[in-house]
Image 1 (cartoon, rainbow, N blue to C red):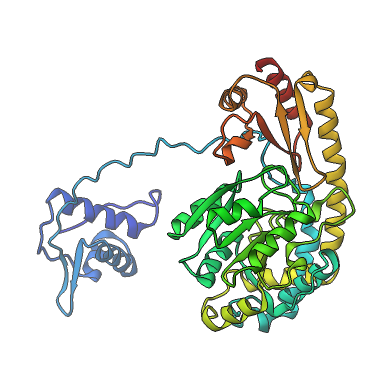
Image 2 (cartoon, one colour):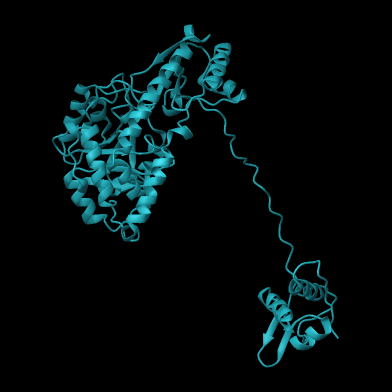
Length: 455
């Protein structure tokens, strides 16, 4: 007779019972095909309820130890003890420590308008429920596209129809859409030095690209012509990483290059144009274009937070028609909750207030960082290269040591920094990127002292 002793201290009795039966099966005491007692008999012999026995049997059935045969009862399954599994070997690739980064662009927690955002999100959930659960067109919700068009008219002097705007989850996604829109047979020109991800994105999409070196005014039309490129991917208002602002005459030269052939286009990345120190705005290539050759791109990752993956592009009208005709089957990659909340944030004036507040903060922060450098032991061995735009500038250091040596010495002290040569085919430029948006003065002071000691 099969009986077990159960108690009130080792957890639920049905689990105690199932574990005891399981142990007897694994040890061979109960063999495959053995009939188990009926629920009523087993309950009476073990001093438990029939429900406890039923739950224990159900547990064993789910684990494969017991089989229920209709109108006959419960039997031990043809159970084989599983092979010992290989131990899980934890990866030796430990996550990189979160070190202070002189070139990093992480935003201050205090900078994000959490209270306003949460208020608008609640309003959206309350008043836009029908819209939130409706399908979204590939180019994004009309309300957000209309709000962006209004923002561009006010801040960038751009006359844009909401129908020309396409919203996506980050610029990388929009790049992939552009590749499909423009065609994979075209050759893309990217700036050297330039944004490192571009070459990787184009390579991953099997797109031909060429790196075109910059001069002190940015990308030249002459070198662009000789490169054989069809599409120029540029950031004329505040180039990353050099910080160059392309002068007006150079912009017109590039626009003439694009207008010379119908298959030529300029992708204008205006990634941090809201944060110019000087009040005089630089016109966008898009607003100067008369041939429909410029595709304008921007993101809220710089103006709000890097984790808000909402970007957008403005297509010339002909490309906008092509997008709706050929790529409208795509689903929008930005959730409707975020799109409707952001549209309120812009249209109700909160975005403008946020930009004005952050611009004032960044102007003060920028000057504080520059003052710190000019008062440091490094002051006579460095030059600050800045053009009153964006959230970073270049620190040129007079040294014979390699960029890698300086970065390595700083890393030993727990501080990271990025050099211009990290984004260029030219090595040892002795130029380093200082992003001041969230730079701690104590960290900066310590870093400047270390650099002055190793150069």
